[in-house]
Image (cartoon, rainbow, N blue to C red):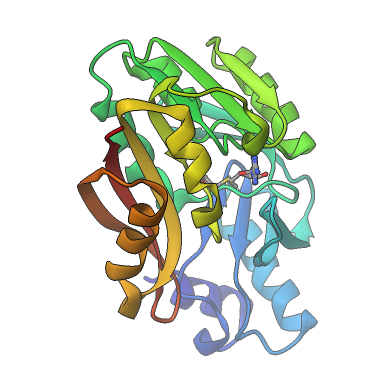
Length: 266
Ligand SMILES: C[S@@+](CC[C@H](N)C(=O)[O-])C[C@H]1O[C@@H](n2cnc3c(N)ncnc32)[C@H](O)[C@@H]1O
């Protein structure tokens, strides 16, 4: 039975008002409830989830994430407690789902990076968040040195705690990655942020050594792939070799989160 059918049966509300998919982080289920008619319907739906999913203790409506620091807009509908311990691929992420975003759609990308690092490289994670990329790299890759930069004080506090929980150690910097004052420093630069990531490309190229790899994430209308991201790279890096490009996930109709890997040649 599908999620819609299950909840429809238990809550006595039409399947058309129930989302087809959901996201679970730790004990929190996040739902986009655009189709639910009113607050009473949302409440019934959330109560049905709590009764059918024993691992879920809080059901929240996710309206999206906003602003430069990608803070989620979330309303608790049933249950309580949004601070979670979310386990994924051998890493524990501690964070408050109401304050910090966590994209499960990036799972493949997190795994892909771990497999890419085959020597003790220096890696700079320009938008570290709670350690989405860096924790996995520290625990499972051959990276030699990791520097994780994060501007949001809440995410930074969780990042620091996640180092302890996962028993790893690397350098963390609280602040804006544009102020990270180094040149020709890293073998790999991770730009795990959007929208508007293009404005950070010159800084990524600065941080990169000759021959370094940059993982450039951004969001695009499907019709602009791949001309637009490749044009942005060319503008910031005179000599760049494109190593790969892929759509990470769909984020709105005809709009996707994409990543281009390129090598900086200085
Ligand atoms: C939310 S993460 C992106 C999601 C992540 N890649 C994943 O796998 O789920 C992006 C982070 O970049 C941080 N950020 C935004 N602008 C920044 C800047 N100029 N310098 C450093 N961190 C920044 C945000 O606070 C946020 O925590």
